[in-house]
Amino acid sequence: GNSVTQMEGPVTLSEEAFLTINCTYTATGYPSLFWYVQYPGEGLQLLLKATKADDKGSNKGFEATYRKETTSFHLEKGSVQVSDSAVYFCALSDQAGNNRKLIWGLGTSLAVNP
Amino acid sequence: SAVISQKPSRDICQRGTSLTIQCQVDSQVTMMFWYRQQPGQSLTLIATANQGSEATYESGFVIDKFPISRPNLTFSTLTVSNMSPEDSSIYLCSVAPRHTEAFFGQGTRLTVV
Image (tube, rainbow over the protein chains, first blue to last red):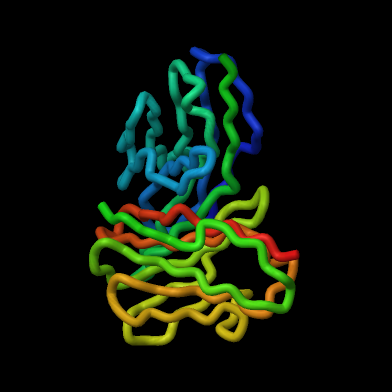
């Protein structure tokens, strides 16, 4: 079945450092791919998404490109801020028929120090 | 977008008791999803709740333990029955009205003692 493998954390960076959080997937068909973020004490919210191969999702300085050839959707940011400290989840949509389940990675905790 | 209100936000419960979690959405949606997020773990789908029909449970989850109600298109409840410490988790309500993006409530942090 479909699955998502996400880089383990925790990740600790200094402010303005470059961030990469790896995400690879296995899927049949053509799923959509997502990054969700969970800030401390808050609910999950969508950070960015890509719905087809070679699409690049971007938001708040974060980017991720849907790479079908490497089955990857790595999250990157050129210069992180303390406010980016959160848990990041990679997910893919399972859209067989009316089934719209999301398959989740384990989450990667990011701590950014000033 | 969709705004989801979930309550309670947290609770501490005695083992053997039950807790009902409520989820209210600001728009009508066909399906509502209930997830569990155990400490240090990812999200696991418990069940999908459709209005007017029985909920569909994922492998490992049963109706007797997690009964769900879906009385209308904007509301659902999840009950965690006969609780044990292993049920300590964050429980999340979610909707996906446009089929491509999921929206979540703030979650209910449950501790069973």
